[in-house]
Image 1 (tube, rainbow, N blue to C red):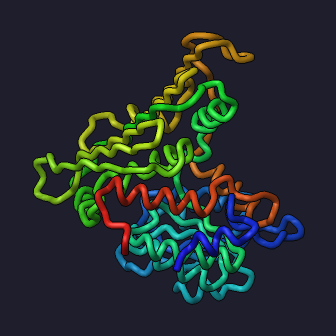
Image 2: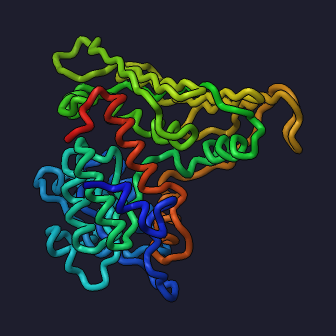
Length: 353
């Protein structure tokens, strides 16, 4: 039986696991399992450049993917090994699981069973029950599991959360998200292997933000279509409506939007203000409207400059701090579970397996 009973019984139930404090500032030994995830090489590049981590090994069971990875500069010079060999490297503390989605949970469970901290890329698989079991194990073993949602350390998203927390936006009643792109034929076939389609593959990133802003929804209504002319089964035009007691949120994702990357956005409307972030990935300014002045923010519409950032750097820095016992994650295991349940429901997938 999961989770609430086990996770909430621990001191880290509100945030994330709080491992024993690591004395000193020695580099954390980390390995990576998988190179097939879309974020795999980007994260490895960050770990290799980081002063916090020492990459000690790389695992890729798929021979084709391994051959492809061996040609990339990101992986050059790293020792290749089996998962068993990696988990037995002396002093190994953490593993980044960066496989294709179908293998994420299996390897994550292998790692936490071996007593390792885990960075788990998105989404958290297709089995909510297995994800619950993994979270139980991390709780019992005082390990941390960090989900790889890429907007958690985005300065614009952090500004949105700060303004909401301070009450400048009033009570939120609407959130609208769009997360789309053009998917080529090869990747359409890969994505079509998963019943959740584009909502599962891509929009999970913004669902994480919505649940962070509003909490777990009372109801999720998914709408999905296959409208592409390609001969595949990909759910390529998807919408989900998330219902709350005093708010609605919509999440839209498609595989055909021209220049969709630059139009990805989140709009949050509250009774005292509205904030519009577009594009999501590298915003230089956000559009803010306030009903009244709050310090440096004036009444009415204004453009607010936000700092630049590099993907994955914030994740890696935070992961190291949590492993060393310097802080706790700002996203709890209960949040991660609520996100995954919402992702599956929004994707039209079952949550009882």
